[in-house]
Image (cartoon, rainbow, N blue to C red):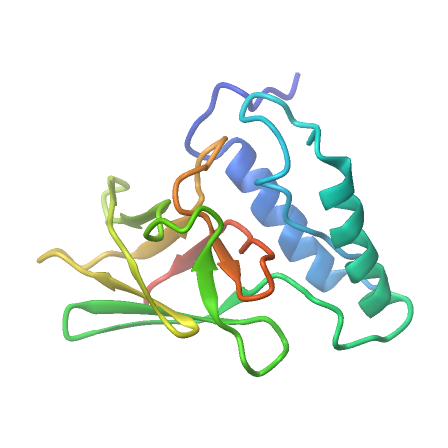
Length: 171
């Protein structure tokens, strides 16, 4: 039996990550982020109009070729230099700005170390980039919204659409 509800580190976050990746690999498939459209303990978002609006925008892009339909920003570059990790995002407009859904500082970021341990870290926004100060240890990966019910400082684009959860290696 497939059970992921009780697995905080890898259950739902891994499913979300693979769904998002599949939508980019399989022709005529789209995905939308709905982390902010429901309750923490329910797979099915109660705010159906938010889900419908996001799916409509995805259909406009996918079916009707409307490249200007809003989409969620995605991480496109992760760099570590001089004790700073920068994660750059793009939403397809060429002018992606970032914010948080609740107006708080960006949350839900964590660094992963070679031994598998992880540490939640504060982050800041600079235009279309998230900046994280890296402690003395060199991380091997950065993860965002990697919990079953992430809800603190969720990132969104200037269009209000949330950023999908991700786990990115750090080269």
